[in-house]
Image (cartoon, rainbow, N blue to C red):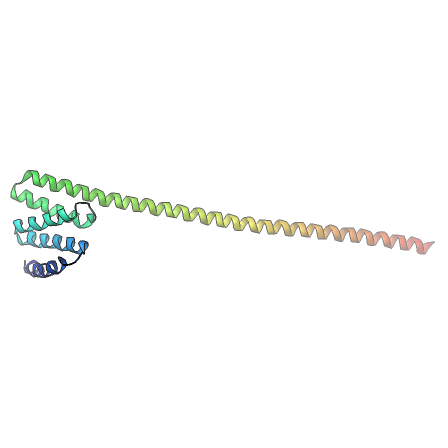
Length: 172
């Protein structure tokens, strides 16, 4: 309890400073923290006030990770106060925040696998291109070797034929 009271002092100082700025993420985080501190101190009305402030500011679910905990605790506040309809509304918001996080994680996983697929595809194409270039070089070299061997064979035959002609000419 002592730490929650101390934390509230810091939160109030931070809140006073943040109201002068446009730092929504930090402000929303501060409001959520204040609601949590009041909740753990058992001051449910104050906790509810700061949770409501936080939820109103983050109505577009820009920060579902923070909203998840605030709506869960706000649900518990409403449940303890006996406000069934408000508790149900907080529970539904909690589920939407949870789904939002899950969908975001799923989207990130899908993008990651898509990027991996594209990278692997490019790597395969590059290796195939490299392999094709190597094969082309081998084919060109083998053709050159065949041409050289053919040329050498023709030269050898021509040399032998000339040697035969010279040996016949010398015999006559």
